Amino acid sequence: MTTTPTPPEPLGDDGTRLWDEVFAEYDADDFSPGDLRILASAAACLDTIAAMRGALVGEPLIVQGSMRQQVANPLIAEIRFHRAQFAALMRQLGLEAAGSEDDSRRVMTRTEQASRAASARWSR
Image (cartoon, rainbow, N blue to C red; front, side):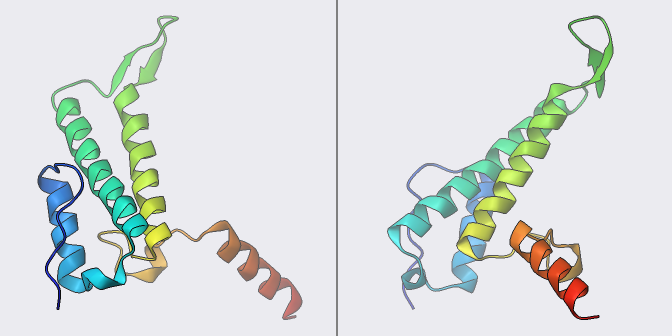
C-alpha cells in the first residue's frame, strides 16, 4: 500500500478529512494526476462550504433585496451551488458523495434518469 499523497493545496479541516478518508479507503495508485486535482478541488469545495456555513451562523436567513423585497440570504444559494459542485466532482471520480451510503438518496445523473425512463416505457 502506498502512502497518502500530499494535496496540491493547503486544505482546511473538512477538506483534509475527505482527503484522508478517500486514501483510507482507496490506494493512491488508483488515482491519476488529473484525479488527484479533481479530488483536491472537491476537498477545497468542502472547505468553502464550511466557511460559508460559518459565515451564515447568526445571520438572518431572510434579507432585504435590491428592490427592498424579502429574499433568501445569498449565502444559502452559494452553499447549495457548492454542494452540487462537490457532488459533481465526486461523481466525476466515481466516488460516492460523503454521507450517501444509501443509494436511494443519491441523485441520479441525466443519463441514469433517461435510461430509467426508457426502461419504464419499453418494458410494458
